[in-house]
Image 1 (cartoon, rainbow, N blue to C red):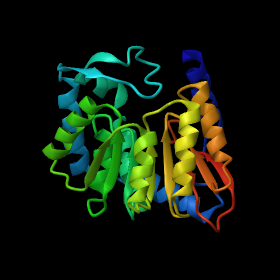
Image 2: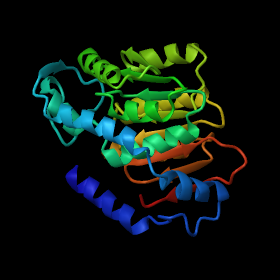
Image 3: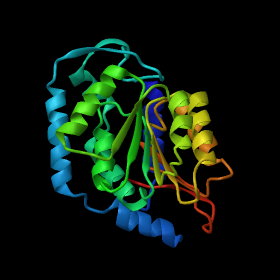
Length: 264
């Protein structure tokens, strides 16, 4: 698995480009790269969230964890007793990508934000604080992890996060029954091909052409790479962007269907 990830990283560096948007002929994608990808995140928000991360990285409390997805391929033990520090180290999104989620949420999060995979809430907070006027609906399978995330949300004073605890299969239909039409969807928490494609089909069927879907860890495993390829090929997808860690999918009408590999 390690060799697979190394190979994919090398391939990405060889094929990616458009770091500053130069050479992109689509005005929409050029604007996205030059303005949203390169936008400066509110550093007061970053400071709050990263201070919280630092405190969790030193939190030695152990909790019982049940992993409903494929878990981490870096850390082999995904179930049983785990420390909060261990979860923060291996399951929380890095700052670089948290800041990108902040910018994407600020740009596309109108109408609400949906997240599959809360973990300790780092990614949730980046998106929630980007759009405090919109609700973010976040789902976590493990109740003990969800409880710690809820405490983190309270510690930063967020009032726009709606937490769900349960499997994605159970909670997705429940959320969509409330009439949510999320502008941004972030999928991180189940790294198995077939379930991931199932969630994506549900999301695509309950979204508008303004919805943007971000998939985390698209080259974590051969399964994830296959799932990413199939999602890109979905008839509802007009444009896809590969930044190696994230795959970003647009349902937007009126732009030419294309796939971009962008250095980030």
